[in-house]
Image 1 (cartoon, rainbow over the protein chains, first blue to last red):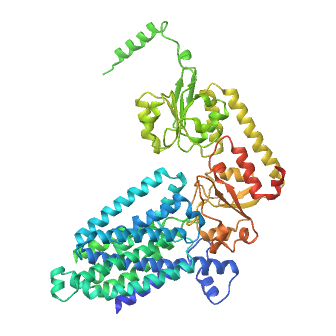
Image 2 (image 1 turned 90 degrees about the vertical axis):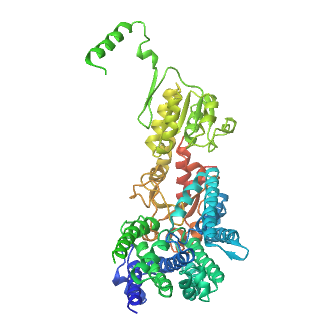
Image 3 (image 1 turned 120 degrees about the vertical axis):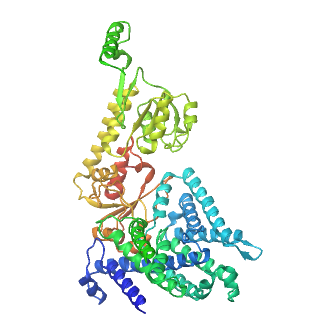
Length: 325
Length: 303
């Protein structure tokens, strides 16, 4: 139980840090007053409608990326696997860039996220079709299909940006860096509706994924339905990644680093690894988002920069610790 | 190795031959320094020019030297008549072959590291090029002055500058007695990207009787925190839309922006991105357009 308590405390600390961080300078004291119904309209708007939905989005997106990364690492049995490896992000980026270049994104609202979601679903579908031969899914083919589809989609994106209006390039660039700016409670509700049930479904795969880590023949001998497990892991992992990309763009390193970190600290049993990655991913991203908007005055830096700059050295530290143990 | 003795010989040779050589003054009648710090010389005004800077194309037209343009970038869309000049490709990462096919005696390029390799290539091929940076108002002035010198039309450049100064001064006069309003310039969202002091648009807002809400940011287009916009609560929000720029939609349609003073008081105005997002000879029109957008009481004056 102790690791779970530690992780819950970590998530709580991240949430509070996120709530008291920002250029408007509202601190712990204001937080208490506003949550009990006090404070003026502006402070309430900043805390309840700008910061709070952002913190919730960070927790949900980080959690989804953590679980998705854990699933892909188990499915592909490859330490470099991460949520974006198999084309989800380049599909989403192509959808978003199409919306930017054709100008339909100017309609505002949910157009850009929906275009991104559509793009990633198409990419997932293509990769899935290519990798499924005669009813079975070869994970080596899956990796190649994903990487090649990614490369193809990226080339399409570059082509569109080169031929399209110059300003679309700039918007697309910022979109690919990822940002939680401007997320609303509605977006949080949609994220929660997707991410929480999908994560619970992923947790139910844990026993079969443990068997799969022994190899496909061994897993089959242990009574695991190997094909169904692989298919489920791919679909759930991809959908989790797709929904995060639609909501906040591409946020790197969380999905790669968090499951590895959990594995190094608490072992590779997926019955623990997946729920722990859920909690740790959420906490890590909420802290990263606070760091992206806290110390820079009115300026905000892309969250992907924070996850990489802080995440990578921390991960290397864990890796060294894991190897010397 | 070139020792002291041999250098003496070189000098001596130079002295011997100087009576027959053409004096320096005659060889380089025209000399300017571009924004990469390179001194470029011409014996006579070039008149086969490829301009890969849309704003410079506009300047060449404004100096009535458009008959010397033999190529332009795909982004050039102003003034009328520009479409009859052959298109030779992108402004950055130029198509060298297409440019060379026009037989240019001068190529105008945007200054910046993006164009470093292109410049090198033109240098190797012996095609003169000039690099200009057009991010701030003083850079527009110096670019017009230098193009006037190069094209042999310094008087035209002077009168263009005088006309621009006159237009800017008239906008200043009209806004001088108005209460300055704080303005948020909505470039993109989400995340919110606006203009900082590093952009000429910041200076244009000042002339137009406004104050950029993020004047304290030094970058030309900083990404800012939504919270900071709420705290600064600008009087007016302008959002640019144009042919080349769809923009990010009406800021008042964004749920979290509905409480902003500019939104509740109906002070969200669309502005013309095609006019504003290029620093060129139309800068006076751009300033007037901005002034009328942020001070609607000024607008009826123009028919």
